[in-house]
Image (cartoon, rainbow, N blue to C red; front, side, top):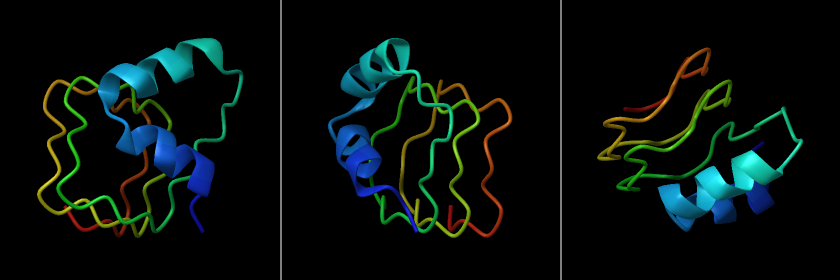
Length: 76
């Protein structure tokens, strides 16, 4: 189950998300099963984020950093 606090930060957009990632020491980015359809994640730092089972239909992931991100079973 996705960490709802992280989902809310991500929904604010890439700029806020990336700033939070720079300041945060959290390494377990749990977005499992999150409902993120249509979200703009352009240029977002998604490194090592776990999106398994998440709904990302229509999401803009262009230019995002996705190294070691887990999208297994995600709807893209």
